[in-house]
Image (cartoon, rainbow, N blue to C red; front, side, top):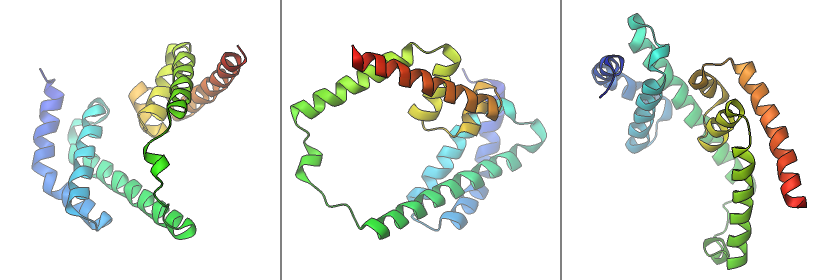
Length: 174
């Protein structure tokens, strides 16, 4: 059962969805599917951080999320274009699609080593790593989700990376 706060947020999201779509469409100027995906991402982010919103400014808050998300997508698109213009399109190689059994085994072993090292981290560090690196959240969004400051989360990430580096060196040495 959804919380009353989520239900209210859902009603307000549906009421201002056309405004969000219009805002994202003006920024992205791309295919309609990208606009719809971005608006859905806005809903997910808003639902994840519903408790951070005051009752009197939900529409402005969702518009700010939509604006920032659309700008992020636009930046990613520009970086991708710049990278392709500098390096040219990457040729498709048959080997890229079908890695050898040895390559698969090495990738699996590396992934397992990282999983073991992450599990050994303290809970706060592990959650920070999970959100930023595995779920691809920004440091600011991860800080909101963990109810911590941005600087605190950056410190946790630096500490966790150091611990992971040491753990992985020990695992590879063994």
